[in-house]
Amino acid sequence: MKNLLAFALAIIFAICGAYFYTNSTNSGKKRELLTTLTPLTCDLNTQECEYNFKDKKVLINLNPKPIATLNELDLNITNLGEFKKLNARVYGLNMYMGDIVPQFKKINNTYHAKLVLSSCTLEVMRFRIELFDDETPLDFYFDFDVKR
Image (cartoon, rainbow, N blue to C red):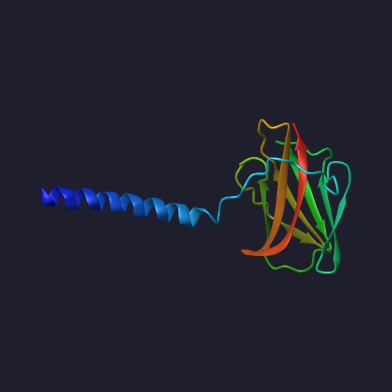
C-alpha cells in the first residue's frame, strides 16, 4: 500500500513539475494578440513609409499595392545601415499565423526581400515586420494592415 501511495505521489509531482516547467518557459515566448487596432501613422498599402532609426530616416516600401495575402510581395528597406546578417520576422499582431522569415539581399543602400503573407478569416489583419542582425533584435519594427 505504501508503495502504491509513493508511486501515485511521484506521478502527481512529475505532472505538476512538467506543467509548471512548460508554462514558465513558454510565457515569455508567446505573443499577446491585439484585440483593438489603432490607426497606423503610415499606410504601406498606399505609400512608402519613413521611420526614424538611430538618427536615420529609414524608407520602407512593400509592392504591389494594395498589399494582399497569398501574393508575392517585394519588401525594400532603404538607409537602414550596415548589418552582416540582416533578417526579419513577419508575424500577425491580431492573429496567430506563425513567423515568416524572409531572406534579404543588399544592393547599394537598400535591402530587398520577397515574402508571401498568410491569409486568415479576419477582415483586417495587422502584421509586424521586426528586424534582426543574426539573432540580435535591432529594436526596429513596423506594422501594416492587410484587408481581406
